[in-house]
Length: 125
Image (cartoon, rainbow, N blue to C red):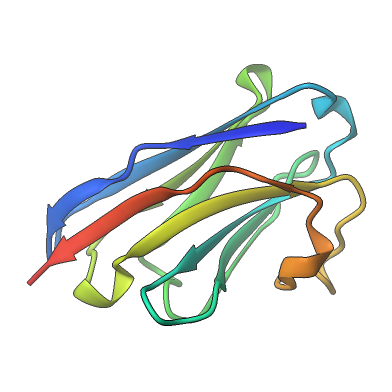
């Protein structure tokens, strides 16, 4: 499975962005996909997860109510709509996928076998 993330950029606080993650190669086996982010000097952290078949979604408390993840199965693409962005949302955003990820393990980086290259999101104050 190959993942290609896109859609990052520079936005003012309070603004919005939509990230995309296009999957290719063996996508029929994907069970779930997640979004993670890594700010300078910090560890990579979980942002959101979506189950590929059922579409159930889960979010980190820091983004709940502001970010929405969705997927278009026909296009093999996952999205992250980010509203009311804050300077602390500045990070490189990564998408990840796995064939056997579970709700219990969706926040764990090591549980994902496939990763996109990351896209930079910068929020100015």
